Image 1 (cartoon, helix red, strand yellow):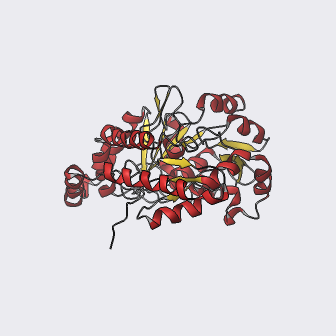
Image 2 (cartoon, one colour; image 1 turned 45 degrees about the horizontal axis):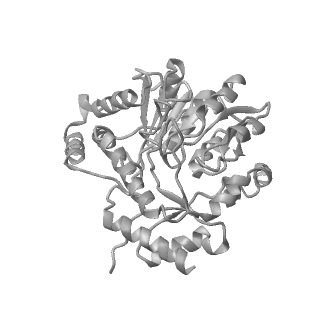
Image 3 (tube, helix red, strand yellow; image 1 turned 90 degrees about the horizontal axis):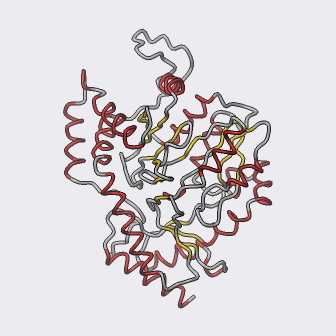
Length: 376
């Protein structure tokens, strides 16, 4: 049986194994929180924020952020139409309404102009997403949001190590959130992180994530109904080891993108991930937009690559097209408004981007793409 080239995956070394083994053996009793504290301190230092809170997922980090902002029924939260549903699902968790903004044709991230057109008197937060490791025009987005007193929740789930004019991804909003899923550049298997500079908000997040208990409470006198959102010591140990290798991991991602770009540079009709001036893209998912013709629809491309022993993923579909939002009144508005989202998504795929990629694998992917284009 031919072994397929995987679409994504981590780099795990003896360092990670040693840290996790130590946590399994020793992170109990008085040492139960040692790895959590080390990981959170190191992560906050890396991103450049005062606080970091280790969590079981990025989804929980978004949920906690919205809850800590005080968002609830009757409120609206703006998200880009093209992103994973985890960016928008927590809006429903708190009873608010997601509003889907269009994306830019080059960055594939939220359009500031579309954001501005979506704002109403009910808008209580905006969630720009650092899609596939790229960065939106955060200066324009923050200017629009700040002028109206709307908090920015930066979804940096896919962008650990990316930068916007010298600032790390995740540090550009009132909160920033990260994913450590097994597919991500930095992984804890499952897991996430919330970062913030806001001391009051940090205290509220810590309170809500521990079943509404005040810090230091040993009497179990829960003041509110909260949540149970905490990472295990073994996950924190794995994350700490990965964080100590983050420059290496990001360099691997960027090197792999450069190899793809070089090998595919002779196909002018293919559009790949962009990197604007002042932005450092970490290329979590190396992606390509094919010519906008029916023969190059993403479902067909994923199938054709699979026939060649290559796993790939379809470019995220607009949230407003998903069955989960089919009856949502905002979906109909988005379909009329979000021209870029609807024009790009059907023809985009994520190419193999795992940290186990070899030159031979990249050669195979690129030659298969050229064959598909040549024989379409």
